[in-house]
Image (cartoon, rainbow, N blue to C red; front, side, top):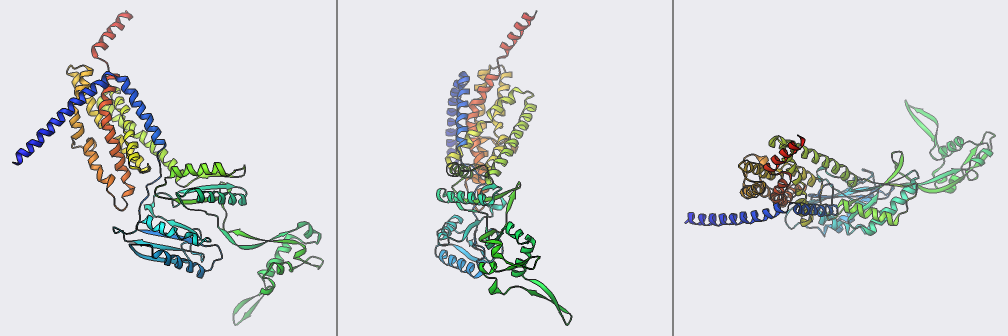
Length: 548
């Protein structure tokens, strides 16, 4: 009974392959007979593919889900530790009711700030997830926290992601450069506001410029100071001694020394009016009040000033939503800036973060891909002992790009650096089908078949092995075995699987379409680049006679 069932399925499969073989030979004969139309059709497909690739979403690395979420909170300079702690505890209490499936929540006050780790005005909330089915994911927790950000307008929020060390902590990074710090800060805040209002895909946009503590700036009128026979150093020293104090003497008692510091009483140095009452003595012994020499202005000083290439720089930074790619964010931000921000000669913009890294790394990957193709060509040239046949296989290699673009358009995934690595791997795999076909065509030609007959017969005879055979050498494994082997890698998830899935998807898409197109296009190219031996002999004789 079992033998009958197996024989039944074997007969059906054999009939199916025979029908497929006959249909393929008829269709291949049409392509070989209309060679140049076939080439034009392939060129048209490649042009459409390149256009589709340019409109695809691209990113540096795929977004990876994590088992914990860390929210960093920074309040204005001068905020007390108690205030910071109260805000964090209040936020924890609100969000705790919205979460499902978490292990624990750790609140840290006085540390974990974005720009000033360990200061009293910063803190963090870390939420550990269970990863169980039905529990909240990293994105769910982040969205739950974002609902309450508007309740704390004075605070700056950002999410920290590990991502196995891949990518940037801030994928969006626009550097505003200028010699005028105030102008750079104003431009950065304008860009930040535009991103907040118009681009929901950019998460937690903010600047890295941190306002300092309030301060009083004393601007001295030099002309008046010189008129009173005072120097800048004399005035500055008197102000410092009055506010910070000066060591008048050292008290020695029982072997210990204690500095005696003389300064104004706290009540006499607590307001702008008190500062204006400070008197400075000139060389003539005259006392002149600071009110007659300087103007006092309230301001805030920066905690630090960043310079890049000797220019003061302020960064507008932010994260990206999972469905928002780096390439799309860059295009949208550039369009917003061009429409709404007037950049004079004093301000320059540079796009960093994942923008710059993606451009640099993709350029390196394309160079590696070209190197891989050159090496594959060298191996094929030594195999065929010819440059013509390897060149035919080389021309069929771009067909893999059609399948790669197609699978990313179908799945909606973004093309990343990991996907480009998959292209390099494909460069060494997709040539196998062409090698099998050309080698068999050459064998049939040596047996006396014409080019047309050899192309059609070789395609039909090698169709089943190309589709089904798995040779013992891993490098020569053919299409379906490779495709089926990549399915678990490409489509079955797991923690951290997002980082390697693009390799499997790229190989599946490239192998599938490359196989289908190669079995038609490679014999057609062979017919174009090779001519009948008899015709070549006649031409050689004719040219010899003409020379004589």
